[in-house]
Length: 456
Image 1 (cartoon, rainbow, N blue to C red):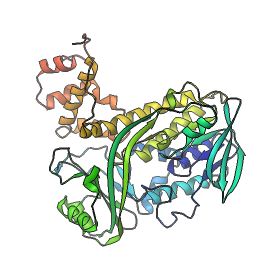
Image 2: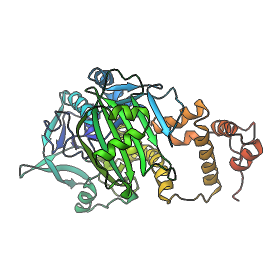
Image 3: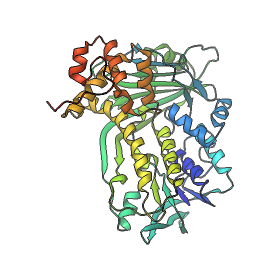
Image 4: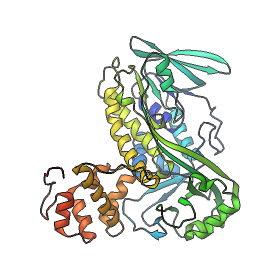
């Protein structure tokens, strides 16, 4: 079996495949030493930016690598609990919730731990090379083509997982083999990230992680999001993000000056010694390749991570999404599938994960960009109204805030926010009369389910 790409998604896929294969080969163009000193690999342009492991991703990592989180903490990563992680909306601090447990480190640090654990498996190897295409026979992938120092290798295979990231060329490789290309859904985001690292004082007793979000009309001087994390090596990582042209001319002095205007944790971080330079990264769009909708697809081929869906990084879903995708792959492989048929069951499982993450990330971006779809059906209008109530109550009621953050933390599906009892609780917290609750969401005071109505 082969995995294309040796990033976090590819390493996790190899770990899952190792339970089902005699030999797993990861094909990766970046040599192992790239990033060994804590610097991002060339193939991960966003690798220097702030990364946070959400609770959903943490659970999956522990599933596949028991004890890895403790090893990360022992190596200098930081665990931020409810009272160590500060969240702000338009400069107003949000209430804490008991489900807040964030693991913060640099991405290369965490990736190195996952890489070490994966490559220690006796049946996992790495082939250094750049994938150039796939061969097909009898309706299935049967070989991977890759080049190393100008020499091509054609490696026969029983199963392939594409984990080559948002720049995946799988659509082209399918087309070359006479297979249909998937449709790609895009949301233009055009956001620019700037990250700097600073020395961290051992005397600081405040938050170890912070996130500051700004609504479109709040006077934030163009700043959309700021984030700060304590990371390994007794350092801080600070990120400022701007939409469109707002971030075109952010230099080091601009970066430092803006940090001094933010909450105390940013001021503390920026007071440390700047390590290296401010590093930028541009994310032009969020994209979802709809492999699950193809009527024809080769057998013995799966796709995970950013190669399927790549989200605005500000929501921190990338690493956790990849981990959840590989758990879907495990479920598929454990279902005794017919490997000579397309991986439809895997795509069905994965779609639930992708759709949830896509909904979470693109909803806010669509509102900011003015392209949010207006509700047209009774159900759409009810859900929009319910979401407004839940969001408004999330800073008044800990139970509602906990449910809301569980979705962002990728431990719960967005549909959980529309549960009648939660919507009723949110409406009560917002002072909404029962008759309005019934009219807008079809609920009476004692209903446990939505009351059916016709479209208006």
